[in-house]
Image (tube, rainbow, N blue to C red; front, side):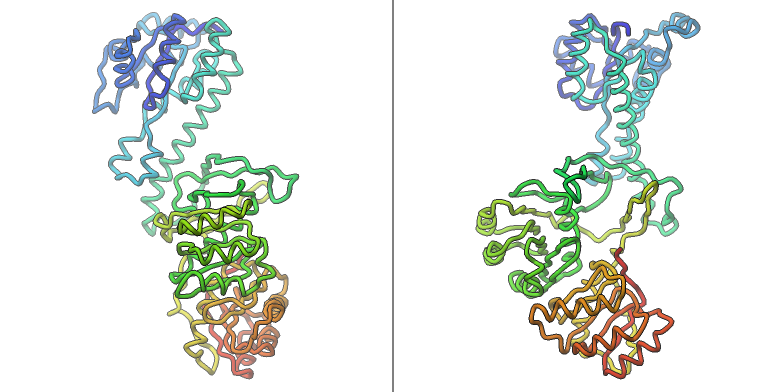
Length: 522
């Protein structure tokens, strides 16, 4: 590797760039620079060449064209061992450029701030990305530096190697450069996808799915201690409860904590009324709603206190001191809410290991997103089951209409059952769950489990409503529900034995509603 003799510096983020430029000048490196970077370095007394003076061509189109010039890209891409290349440089007075220091316009930051479309368009960096790609392509002869965090590594190598940079470091910098441009392009693609996604004709899945995730942090371990794990943020997406959360207290969230907290908070977002949910092993064990958050929490907890131990609590209202006092009387892993009363927060912090998360609900809106499941060697992608159901599309198929109280219980149970692992059954009244059966290979087993869970906690199941995430293939589930005193059932319908199921409901005087929409959650 030869010594670095000429550098091009053109940065938006100017952190530590003055120190870097001074170091390079002290090492005898000639510096070419542009616009604001040139102005800053001149003000700091650093000898620097204006790019326009070097190329003999000014910046044009309000700065849209600055570095896009043969004297720039020829100097970056030329190969020293290629005689024709070097002859071309000499013919046109092009200097060989050995170092490119560039970072990009802050498109991502502005995109997250939801800046106007016209402003975002102007923040799509063209010259910067082109410089980075050119230098990274010719990494053996041109070092590419794309972040202020790399300056120290560069300077240390040049100091120790008499102005040279090792091939290994050049390759690492080149890899980071292509990671950056890939990430940058993915954010911009997401911006256009967001605009086009509002149009019906743009609802198709892309032929090539490009994903862009930025590392948030390493986790202590995965689902089990022998599995490594890490948390990534999907760039360019909207509201994320966990990734938007501020952690007030407690040790780092675990892999399982994150899964459960996301499921719990997603469930309470289904309700406009004050709602509380307790999740254990990625499934709800108790859900309650009320006129106030204290009563909602009590209903959720009393649904299944046994399963609630060590669970994850989610609330969709400010957590009050009264709720905090009840939470601290038992053991929970995580509590997540949109806000906390100061006294409530102080009370919760007395629990050393309780993780306390605050989620800014002002960022929330119900919007489309993809659900992705990794399989070995592939990826399954689907629309997330996140659209609100339309009760006007439901059909009463039994002889008897549900009563007002039964309708309330059916609607409540239907909102909850979509968050239970299939086969899923929820036994409920108007404002709370009484028994939940999920993850069973047989639907009648799930019904039996929900009833068993309710009875084990001393709940009376007479006059209750039952929700099923999928249709009943046989009448046995209806017969079992009738034995427990269930008087109303809601399910998608669509079985070849629907008639048999409807007849069973009528025999037991059960009101039966078909939603014509299922909510499997595997």
